[in-house]
Image 1 (cartoon, helix red, strand yellow):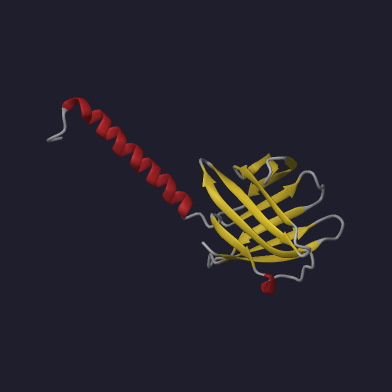
Image 2 (cartoon, helix red, strand yellow):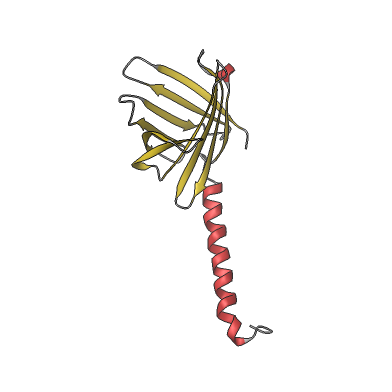
Amino acid sequence: MEGIPAGLLPVRLLSGLSLACLLAIAAVHAADPLVGVWQFNPESSLPTKLLKSERLEVSSVGPGYRFVYRIVLSNGANIGYSFVSHLKGEETKLVAADGNVFGAVRLTRRGAARFMIDVVTDAGRHEEYRVRPDGRTMTVRQTAVAGLDNLMVFDRVR
């Protein structure tokens, strides 16, 4: 390449390839319908007396995903927790905002816009997350052995 010293040519080519690879990875995750910031929509959800608000942030982290939940209960209590998963059924620890581990879940991807959460520490509790085809809303159906059946709707805010 004209104007580039011979010793810098391999470095220049590698830098260009590295940037191209990073852009390709970012493009794949950017097109992922799960990635985004989701806000609970109480008007579109089945009534719940316990929940005042909930925000879910899903971001890509290497080959996996980071989930960050921020919840405000109707009594004013704030709950925050996060976890990282590859969505391949592996057990993942729930980490509270203060850094303490308080439970475990298994996440499994069931298609481009759908994944399941099985709560390991609450046997029988299951959640199915599904992004609607328009990409603007996500439904979460929670079920449990004890008869819990809840449908929550989240709107994409980013």
